[in-house]
Each structure stands twice: as C-alpha cells, then as structure tokens.
Amino acid sequence: MRVDLLSREYPPEVYGGAGVHVAELVHALRKDIDVRVRCFGAPRGEAHTHSYRVPDELANANGALATLGVDLQMAQDVDGADVVHSHTWYANGAGHLAKLLHGVPHVVTAHSLEPLRPWKAEQLGGGYRISSWIERTAFEAADAVIAVSGGMRRDILRSYPALDEERVHVVYNGIDLERWKPLHDSDLVRSLGMDPDRRAVVFVGRITRQKGLPYLLRAARLLPPDVQLVLCAGAPDTPQILAEVTAGVELLQAEREGVVWLDRLLSQTELSAVLTASTVFVCPSVYEPLGIVNLEAMACGLPVVGTATGGIPEVVADGVTGRLVPINQATDGTGTPVDPDRFVADLAATLIEVLDDPARAAAMGEAGRRRAETTFSWNQIATQTREIYRALTH
Image (cartoon, rainbow, N blue to C red; front, side, top):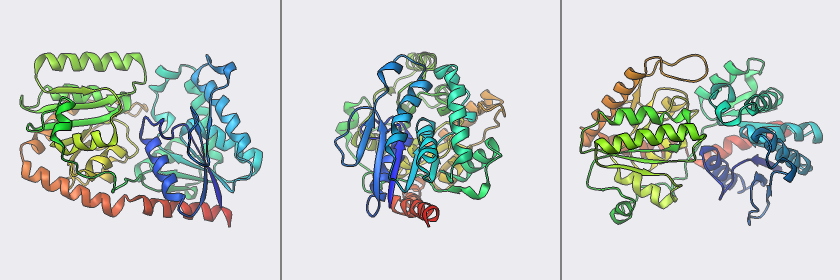
C-alpha cells in the first residue's frame, strides 16, 4: 500500500501540534507502509519526502490563495497513491483535488476547525472565507475523517452536519515516550533564565487566540510571589495578539520576579528539561482539540492544569493526572469565556491548589506519565490509522 501524506508542516519546519503529529505518524506508519510525504517549504533531505514552494506569481497573494498554489502542485503529484491523507486546511485542498483527479480515497485528520477559529480572519482577511470553504468541501467529500479526540468529533459533526457520522473516527494524538521523559538538567534550565530551585508554572504554545495566554497572564498576577511563570511562547498569529501578549508580560514583569519568556522554538532537550524542572503545566486554551503539549508535559512527569474544553478532559483525568478548570463559553465560535474574570480567578485558584500540595502534584505527575504510556503511544495510533486505510482499499 502507498499512502501520500499531505501537510503544510514537516520537520524541520514545524511550529505547532499538527506538525508534531504528522512527523510521528509518518515514522510509525513507515514500519510497514510506503508513505510519501508532500509538504510545504524548503527541500528536505529525507527519502520519499517532497517539498513544494508557493509559485512566484502568488508570492505576494493572500495567504489562502498562496496555499492553493501549493495544493495544486501536490494534487498533480499524488498520481499512483492508494490513499491520500491530508492534515489541516492548508493541505485539505490538495487532498480533495487529488481525490477528484486520480480517483483515490481521501482521509482527513482534523487538528482544528475553521468555524471554531473566527479570529483567523485577523490573520487571513478575506482568505478566511476561502480556508473555511476549502475545509468544508474537503471534509464533506472525504472518505474518512479522523478526529483527534471525542470532543473534536462532536465539534466536527456540529460544524458540518452534512457529514455521515459513520465516516468520522476518533484516533488520539500520541507521544513518543522514548524521547519525552523526565530530564533533570539544572545547568541547562538556568542558562534559559529559570531557577530550578523555585516553584514554577510553565506554558508551552503558539501565541494565538485559542491558547488563552492573555487569561493566564492575568491569573499569574494572583499567584504567590515566589512562583515563577515560564512562557515557552512564540509564532504569533498576528501583530495584534503579539502586542497584547507583550504588554501583558511587561506588566507582569514590572510587578513580580521570575517571569521568563522564551519566544523561540526550544529544542526537545531544552523543553524536556524545562518541563521536568517545573511544578505544574498549564493549558489555558479556550479551544483545544486535544493538545499534544499536554501529553509532552505528562510524559515528563508533570501534572497538568487545563481548561475543561475540547479534548482536554480526555487527556487530563481530573484529580488524578491534574486538574480541570471549568469554563462557560460563548457559542459564537470564539470560545470566549462568558465571565472572563471568573475564569481567570478559577484558573489562578486551581494553579495555587496544585502548587501548594507538592506531594499530590508529584503523584499526579507520575499518574500522568503512566496514562501517556497506556493510552497515547504512537504504535497504537498507527495501528488504528492503518485499519482506516485498509477499510478504504479493500
């Protein structure tokens, strides 16, 4: 069987969870399947991996049109595949066109949904209407849709009611448990500006509306003064959200010590050391299909405090591997808390609860590592994905 896997992100050009997912899935699938990767960006040196750049004529076009320029090239080259599997709207157009052009089954993995990210209009302008059209068209015509959580499956069926629910499968994101594990390196974390001898709350994520970083910055003002806040946050969606986060960080730094902002993409070694040196991981997202960062933290033995939204409750067992923070959200697709002050207060209170009971925090971290081992291994996820491929080709 030959599977052509289409993605905007692929190492070394990875900036979010979808890119991590694609890289790990390809590695696991290639053990017994011919997988050809087609991705955006600069040439890669990896066998059976093909890269595509935006055509020169579209270099200055709206981002959605530039994406379509790449998708057209990908779709042409898929000829000969038994299955085409696309990830995110950036590659969904290529997958749909390949299905039409070559008569090949199309599998879509949903890492997020355009209807639930209306703030993308800030980034894409009118291109957001194009990205939404691409996603809807691809999903409704796909032979199979993979949701990365049960929460995401419900969101898909609510957003796209024309879909046959029998075509929508749940296959979780996973974690490489050999690479992600506790790493004690005090010198390394000190070189990054963190004090390994102080309690610390750590956040990892892109600077985007869905990650809820402005709410965390407000909640951090309520934490005990000895607690560090370590922000591994970069890749802003827009200048506006970057300016908002920058202002929040500067205000916090003027009020308290121990606010560390690492705005570059950390290596896996650096991030493992930061996670291991922290007391609790925080995921304040207002929209999160699953959250690979939560799995990375759990694999490093860290308890997770996360918003009770999307797929997070399927990862974080409340009171066992961490704590869930309740949130009452607007139904307009933004995920905005109906009462932001209440959400901020609840987030701060839950973080303090975990910080103030180090023995329980350590026990939750150990339980999180065990949960990652039993539920989120890539071998298990690859097996489920292969079964979907085979059902479409037999």
